[in-house]
Image (cartoon, rainbow, N blue to C red):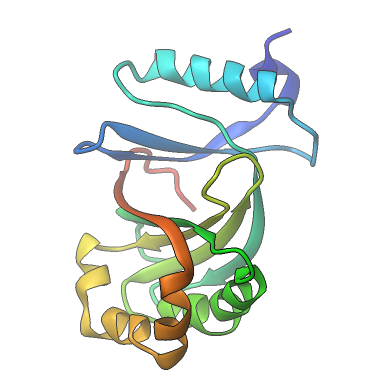
Amino acid sequence: MPCSEEIGGRIIRHVHSQALQLSYVYLGLSHRMALSRHCLNELAEELGKAWPGTRVAASRLTLMHDIAGASAGLPVRFHYVVEMKPEPGWGIELQCWYDQEHLPALAAVLGCVRAQRFWNNDDEQESLACYDLVSDGTTASAEWLAVRETSWSARVRPHFMKPVRTMFALADASVA
């Protein structure tokens, strides 16, 4: 039985960066289950056939934090993802910063529909902060930029290893 049938998941979000030819597909599972690396690779292969020319990889994510944004209820048009691995010895401090200051403050910015943070169980980039946005201009607003400039942010940001920031357009209008 193919992995996709075995796990019984459904695509809950598909976002795409045309410039990078990169898609992120979030698959919701009906219940918690262990997925083998083989199964993840098989899922990535199936998705790659669905979107030719797009790089596809699969990772298991654990939801760490989920906050309704200031613009909750408005249509999501963009999905901004910040991925990073904390420098050794900074993991707990970065988690506290995300949970207590950064994620709640960015969620409170007008134009943010939802802010979430995931732990990536399979990839070098261990932390994914994801923001569903009304506009791709939200991240350039004075309010958004002010959140990035706090003293706590200035102290922890240098301890992001290989940060990757990607703005995705929504590829599927079924985002909730």
